[in-house]
Image (cartoon, rainbow, N blue to C red; front, side, top):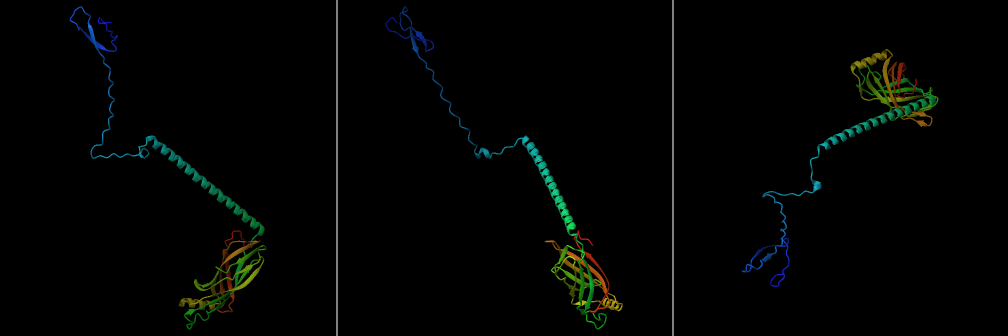
Length: 294
C-alpha cells in the first residue's frame, strides 16, 4: 500500500519489466515505479513458396506414373537369360518326348501290321497266280516287206491269255478293267494297245480269255520292214506283249485294296496272219503283294 492510500498490484519480473524513477522532489519520499507490459507476439506464419515456373520457351508434360518407363536393374537381364535357358531346355525335352512317342507309335503299328500279315498268311496261304499268252493272232501286217505295202499300217492283235489261280484254295482275284493296259510292240516300236477285261476269278479257277489290241498310223522304216519280212521267212517274228492290270484279292469276306500286276511276255510267231502260231514265249510276272509266293 502506498502512502497516498492506493493499492497497486504486485508484479513479478516474469510478467513485466519496469524501471523506477523518482516522481517527487522530496528526497525522503519513496521511489515510485512505473511499469509497462510486453506480451510476446507470435511470428507470422511462413508464406508457402511457389515452385519456380518453367523457363521461357520450355514445356512441361505430365505423364501418368504407370506410363513412365524406367531402366530395369541389371539383375533383370540375368533373370531373363536364366528363364530363357530354362524355357529352351523344356522345349528341347518336349520335342524329344514327342519324337520318342512317334517312334513308339510307328513301331507298334509295324508290329501290328506284321502280326496281321502273318495271321492272313497262316489262314489263307496265298499263292501267286500264273499268267501266259497262249496264242497271238496278227492282222494288218501282211506283206509288210513288199514295196506295194502302204506307208501307214493299222496292225491288230488278238492275244489269248491264260490266268491260272489253281494254287489258291481260299483266295479269289478281282481284275479291274479300268486302268488296265495291254500293249504289243516290235523292236521297241509300239504297234497296238488294248485293255484287260474285268472279271472275278474264284479260288482254284483257271480262266482263258482273249484280249484285243489295235493300232493305227504305224510307219516303219525301210530297215524295220526288211527285218520283219526276213523274220517271217524264218518263221520267227518277235513281239513283246506288256500287260498291266489292277488286282484285288478276296480273303474270305474281305476285299483288299487294288495293286497293279505286271506281266511281260517275249514271244515269237511263225507268220504275220490270224492263223499265226506261237513258236516261243517267256513270261515274267511282277506282283507287289509281299505275302504272295510263286
